[in-house]
Image (cartoon, rainbow, N blue to C red; front, side, top):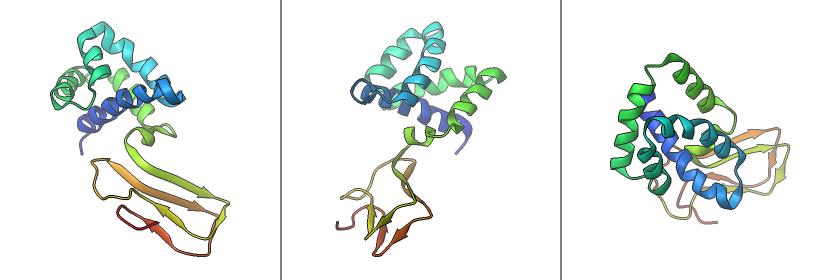
Length: 145
């Protein structure tokens, strides 16, 4: 996937996540929105309004992609966006069911949704560090719990 497409997904996901910020106060999404929102407000306030109401809409993502094509010509903006997208925790905006098991002991672990299928770019990721499991490790959708 090229950087433009990834950036479109990332920014759309951030605006989607920002809806949840009102309930969960996610610091990372709030900080990212605080950085990106003024850039779009200055350039295209109607796009910001559209992203805040329907960030996953294909037509709105197309508008975002068109706007981003212009913005990415500015090397300073591109560098800042790349830095945001590489920060620890940023993968959360594009993913689902991402866990790190560090220094834990458990009988078994199941990661995934009860039903199969979703369009998440990063899904069902388990990073294991210095942990012990006595039973099964199930990573993926559709498995029985």
